[in-house]
Image 1 (cartoon, helix red, strand yellow):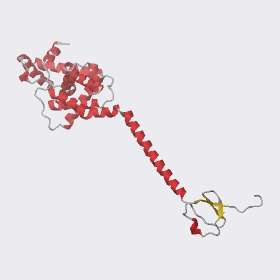
Image 2: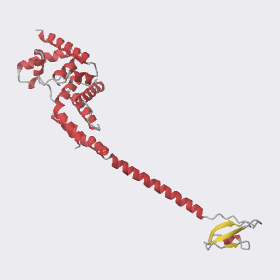
Image 3: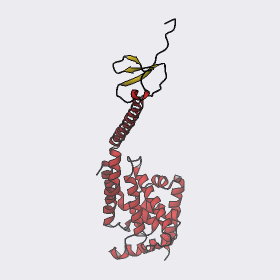
Image 4: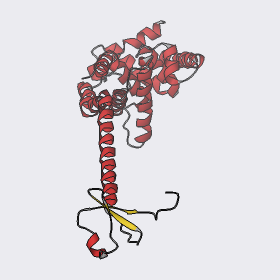
Length: 122
Length: 160
């Protein structure tokens, strides 16, 4: 280092105001910490998001299942002369003499089954 | 406060003055220089970890922020008469006060790169290699800026 450089270094440089440090580190509390807190707890945020997703998926699945079960529980009534009724005690009886209105909605109806005409093979 | 923030506070205590001087060399205005340092630190708080060669990273961030400051406030900046130095009233030594005035005038004659290199090397204690990294220029270019700037300064200061 030559003489001129040494002389130049003797001139005191301006100092930043004392407030600058406070302002910078106030900024940490306003922005830095909140962001680093988010970053620090990323696994937790992911776990919470995953739990929400699983919960939502479960809810949707349960709703769909219930809806399809409700749909299934509605008997599709097709009255054709060859059909018989399966009652809750699984007995079959011929409805051909009964009026069709009386067969629906009495709580005993489980399904309609078609009983094939006995063939020679059977 | 997190470990990173504590580390940044230590770094501020260590380099705050030099960072401010470097920013002042670019902006030539105290308020803008302080804003540049503030902005660079706020950017550092968003880092996930301390980058390699953090000193150069920080000085580069401050320089970039200072350049942004002068671009944004080109028309409203009041240039400080004392440049990077303490104001004359606060310097007790009369000889140094007079020398400071001559140096301030001489620094105005230098190109931006020459002036910045001299300030960074003499007043921020940065090595030429660090300056080259900060300014993203080859080492040879930086040293030639410095030598050329110093020669111009010397010539001006030798004038009666």
